[in-house]
Amino acid sequence: MMNSRYPIKKMTILYRPDGVRVSAQLQSTFFDAIPKVIIHGEVYEILPPLTWFQYVFAGLSLILVLFGGG
Image (tube, rainbow, N blue to C red; front, side, top):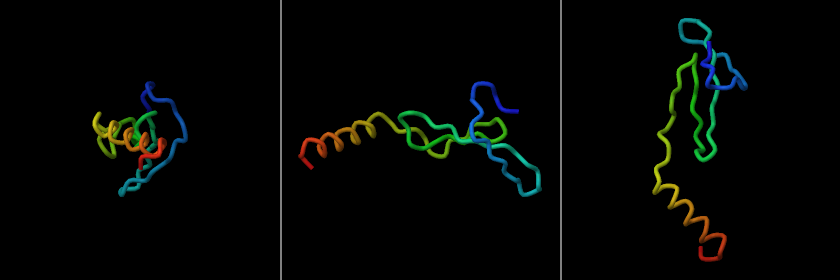
């Protein structure tokens, strides 16, 4: 079953190559655009989380666009 730390939202049933059904769901975080996949209670990261300098670079780009510098 699913771990109690993760709320059950939009559960999806996947089929393994041997025909066994497993449950899957996506868990999103507020700052990161790439969700984590929870398959049969195990958490898998599709991509690693963004680092601090990637957030700074994105924030500076947004500030330039909003204030007419870009």
